[in-house]
Length: 547
Figure 1 (cartoon, rainbow, N blue to C red):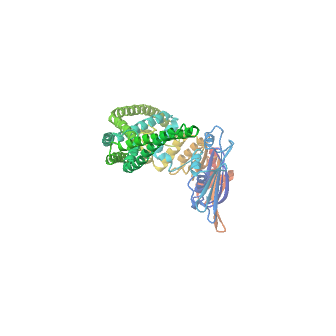
Figure 2 (figure 1 turned 30 degrees about the horizontal axis):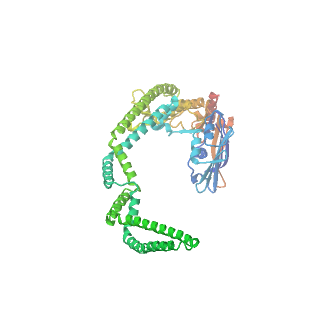
Figure 3 (figure 1 turned 45 degrees about the vertical axis):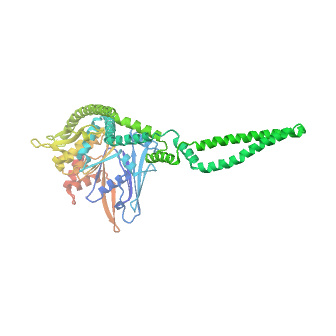
């Protein structure tokens, strides 16, 4: 519940701290006294949009703090754990500062948080209801029914996820098949083009080496001729020298023998050199292609490599052929994806139809419960109904196939219609209260704020609304801003909001009323500006009847 609200420098409030109790707390005051300021301040503390206009004139900074207490079993503590926010399972303190330039900072238990997180967490603690209640919006009716019935939608959510994925997979595959003919033509042409030149593994490197030999053939032949001119006479001279040494070997054997060995080695090495030269000459002179033919081949291979952006034509050819084969046999995967989609669709419909059945059962319970609430609110002849429509397939979603809207027939013989379109202002206020009394039991929000929900009502009807608010306050903390003395008489605590001018500055203040002060405030609400004894007596009668 909301324990306290501290406000500093917000609009007409300079500094104010309010404490709240359990039960039904009424806030009253003259029009313009500043009741809406309290809601603006609380909203600011719970993540509402910050605006510089909220600052009290002449100040540069404002601050609002809201303190809550919750039982340890409440799911809010788990939400804090999920966000990594420290707590001791005690007080929850939301604090918001606002600068003159419109910038603000958000804190939870003195830890900085984002505005979005503050708003998200704040919605778990407080709901505000007024004449323009969100229950008037048809889009909220489905969630209200599901919350009331505590309906588990997870099977439908999972089934829809599978259906959506199957649908997207099929769509993606069909889009690819839409381009298949063009792609197939390209792959066939490219494969044929690569196959036509018939590249060999490592061929480009071999061609490079062969081209180097061919391009230097003349220069190498000239060098070979020079070598031949030197080697042949040298080899002949070595033979002659060897024979000459043999003739004198016996004369000086110890001197000649080493020389003969040296001559032998020289003859062998020169002979090996001649053989290697002849082999190299054969390689150069024996190249089967001329330079032009070789250049054309190398140009063709490199041209295709650039065209298909690859360094390995054979690898690319294999990849093209595999993709072409896959596209040529695409009907098989297409049929499988269509089958999977239909299975997912039927599974989703099965789960969604089961969910619809449960919803319609809970809708009857809601209709019955609301009918019981309408009698005490002087709407005993009204008839409430939960209207169901089936969504078109393109509107299916994780919530199922139902479109739900609350319908009302206010009087016999009057056609029923949507809640917001049929009911008058006074009827609408009572209907909103009745719905909230019924629906709130399914929610976890511990504090409800009603802002002039009695609009368009008065007398016995307003008294009946006060009675329902008081009954609701037995399980929840209720704060009600009201102009109705009949409703104000039901409060377990009464705060009055007023404003005064001091030294040219207007300030709003809030006081908790004691018994006599409360009698006087309700008398003011009954009589207006001039409070009569009759009004005081009527006020005491109203309050006395509630005690």
